[in-house]
Length: 150
Image 1: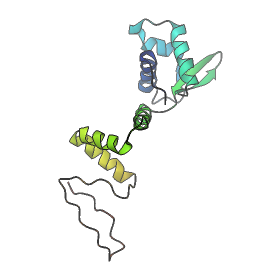
Image 2: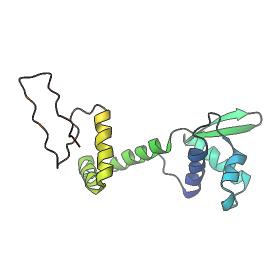
Image 3: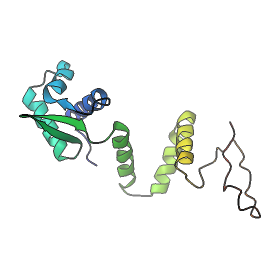
Image 4: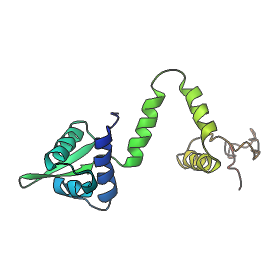
């Protein structure tokens, strides 16, 4: 996934912030108006949006002689892809994940744990402070790991 330049990021922030409830996207003029504090020319914003469309970051739909633009993916999906791309930069993915896991707050760790459980991950990482009951091999109905109780 392409990393965004500063102006591209500002334009994407407008699309992400202003168009979530809209299905029709934003006109270039609406994006320019949202970036009013930056004093950008209409053609500059149009060029940035066209480049973002070329990179697959935005979708555009013709409306008369103009275009409507909307983000191709959510901000969260974009950030998740950046994180996955960072893991592919080289070295050990496992080591990078462990380092990342050790750097998050307790609340962030809970969010990750809940996401793993919700995704059906067969063995979500246990909270080191909470013992996990062992699985009884004699009982095939016993889940692989019990969810820690909080």
